Length: 327
Image (cartoon, rainbow, N blue to C red):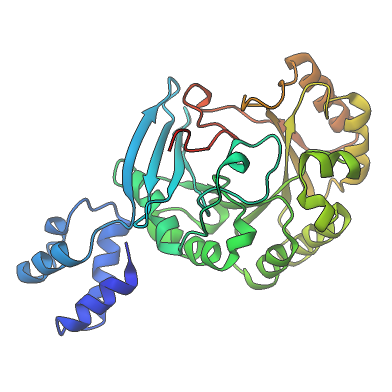
């Protein structure tokens, strides 16, 4: 919802400030229309329905995977595409993967989003409206900023959206913001976010040359500097940093590379998530045997490690696959 437009419309109607809070409470709880907002006068509900859409986004397309994952393609008011994903788990968790940009300018080689034309940063309202779309279907309890875009390139709007997620039922401790290591935004996130939002680092190679080949951002902001900010986050928040590591056959999945990664990371600070590669046309995914050997080597180095469960691969909704294909 465009909250600035809401406040302006209410002011023009001569309404007091608390009306905006009333409307937002309904929206955050998943209201599908103004007609549901029964503590607002009928005339005001009609005025708002005509002037303030419940969402800044239009749903262009939706797909559902065999595992229950749902991917939604949205368009902004100026026609730009973005995607968000609802992941349903057997233990009852309902996690939403949000986009912070339409496209991404950082061109990581294993990520489909990097091959899209970059549009722009999304506003906090546009970010929240992705989550609210799924909240109108069912309660949600986890959010990850791991969709389209680099969150730290849009850090102010990401922080603003993250601070409102508890209204939707997602606590700060269940909110994770990912970065490839865009240092200015990461520093600001570490400095300014006192809420216990989690931090994830998209790393994918311990060797600088290989990481630069996979992720050109490494040439601009070397991994040693990025890891320093991660350590500072841990020192200030006493919360571990997740390391995301996509497994690429013959590229970054050898046991000696796992050993290098274990030597690089402090087990008190970092926890590694190994991500089976989801096809985007650029690489081949590592075999289960290679992933298991890599995991074993990390654990031998006392690095907490898990292999992430892939969701939504059959509808191109898994990690690295969001690209608004054909749109």
